[in-house]
Length: 135
View 1 (cartoon, one colour):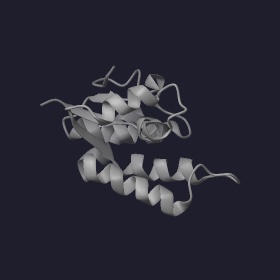
View 2 (spheres, rainbow, N blue to C red):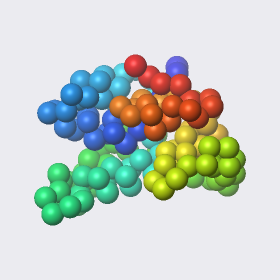
View 3 (tube, one colour):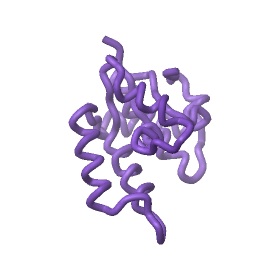
View 4 (cartoon, one colour):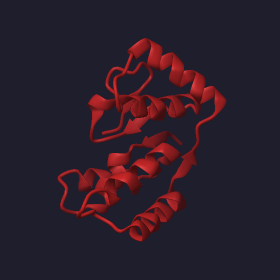
């Protein structure tokens, strides 16, 4: 069975039926592929859906969604090996600002043998050696 790393935007779009990416996200989440995400993706999900003066979700609703994701996705966590990979990727690609988060997600996936990612923002991972895309 192939392995697929699910990016934060896929988690968000799977819950947002008004998004043009909803159908794609639903296909990913309901696929027969072994699905993974990272702890970083889950915290990003929470941050995005609860931010601002008119958040998409309350904190409790966001936590409920995260519980649902954890039930169907295997969560990968940073490790000393993924940290070394992150430093290697950062030296190679020299990201600026928040792009470091995408490199950390890629590093965690790569050290766990997962080079295919489902994302609606391919540009976030486009040039990272070893990363391929679903869809």
